[in-house]
Length: 139
Image (tube, rainbow, N blue to C red):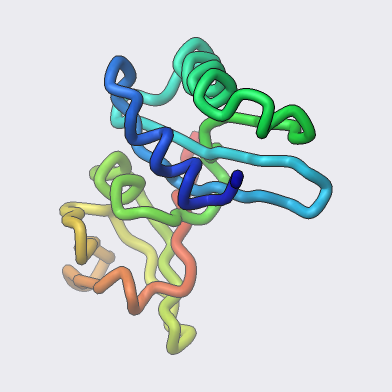
């Protein structure tokens, strides 16, 4: 059966591409969207290899599905700690579960916490405290 758990399991078998899973969405209209990234930036070729791997692993089980494999994009909210790590040195907007908002540069990211430097202080957040976090794009 195709579900998020089985997809994650099959994706973890891929060893020739370095990547992390950001999100998997399975919609009622038979569309599977898989968002992946790596610390260098995921390429189209790598997304295609991931797509082909899934097709070969699931076979006919995926015949009724449309599968999309892509990067999460720069404007989406962060979902996994690796996105914070990749963005070290960049500015981020964090909204906490208590609706406080902080803007600062990411100076550290671990599996459990992120630390930013605002104009006034260094502030550390557990990912559980964060409601939304988004990269601030400066051009």
